[in-house]
Amino acid sequence: MSPITSIEQLIECFDDAEPFEQARILKRLDIPSSNFEKYTSWIDGGYSRNCIVRKKGFEFILLCWERDAETSIHDHSGQHCWVYQVEGTVKEKRFKISSNNEIELQHELLITKGDLTYMNDRMGFHSIKNVSNKRAITLHIYALPIDACRIFNPNKKHLEKVDLEYHSIDGKAVPESVN
Image 1: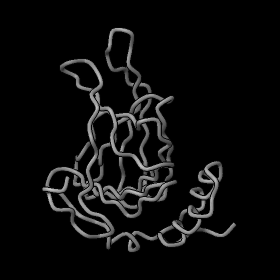
Image 2: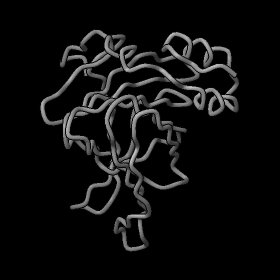
Image 3: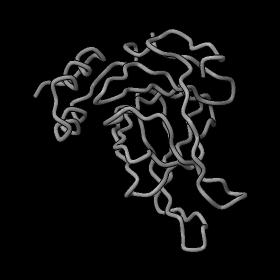
């Protein structure tokens, strides 16, 4: 099969795909970072969540990472999640929660430009951190749209549900009052 070289082509492939075909489609990704410029937005010291497309059967979110930005340890509310590294390098840490509610690191992985990874709740929880000496960009592909997840609160030693927000939708900033 030929590589997928644009966001529009990826959306078209997912529109026509059965869920079991999604992973095979994503292995064909070869989208230049310039294709994502319209969707980028940046937050000083953190990362932004930018919705490229949200449909009944899938959602694509572009995360734009400043240096050293990091997510909390979190799950995916039962969703299948793939991460495609567009620019820079991030480190993914995967965790399990022990019987005494302590977080135990299970695995670490460096993800570099062009890499594709997969995560779901059966695999545990994870966090992602930009370890580049520059900004990084990742494309997060969800099998279904995701509105909330659970993050690990280390002080209380339990998971707390949080609603997820976008910083932009289709390249247009979302007013803070909407989130």
